[in-house]
Amino acid sequence: MNIANNIRKIKAEIPDNVTIIGVTKYVDVTVAEELCQNGIMNLGENRVDVLVEKYNSIKTKPVWHFIGTLQTRKVKDVIDKIDYLHSLDRLSLADEIQKRSDKRVKCFVQVNVTGENSKHGLPPDKVMDFISQLADHDKIEIVGLMTMAPDTDDDLIIKSCFASLKRLQKKVQEKVLKQAPCTELSMGMTNDYKIAICEGATFVRLGRCLIK
Image 1 (tube, helix red, strand yellow):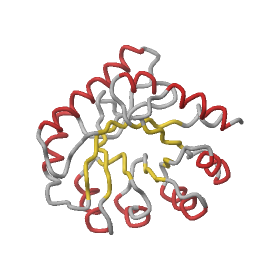
Image 2 (cartoon, rainbow, N blue to C red):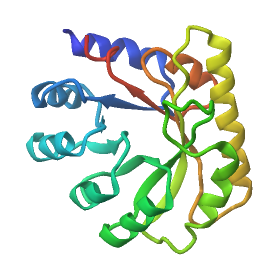
Image 3 (tube, helix red, strand yellow):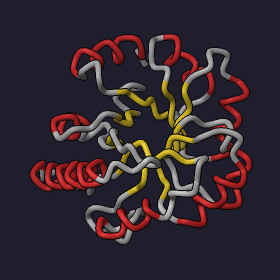
Image 4 (cartoon, one colour):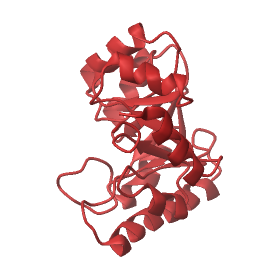
């Protein structure tokens, strides 16, 4: 494992305006700390208990992203420890964040662009109505949209998925909603981040290509 070299290689490929989130769900605190020491100061976790453990253990305090499905009952345990939530997809979750958070949380609305049953997120045609319902939730700022591409080797399908999210983001932006500047796109992982960046990603979620 040569994290420093991996990071140098990846950073050389990624524009400065794209934020790299180091996904640390498969590694321990030591490796997560090493990512921070080598310039990856945005870390992502998909389990509340693991994020809380690392939050309490890592000395160099990173920007924390929760990238998994967040159960409503666990909001209280993690919401004031994270800077970004990438998986807002239902009003009950928004209501609980509004109730529990001591600060304004930057949220991505998760969109199931492909309609796959295996993926979480709102259908694209429900996103605008959902965001409109958040006008009174002053603890939530919709900074952008998030999606996951289908598990396929067909780059054209992946490209189409990401392009669809970009078009939807523009529609939200055009509404000029106070609660939803929607300037960001969280899309792209180790297998498809280059396509995602070409289609407008501003946050990419990378694990294996950094930690191998």
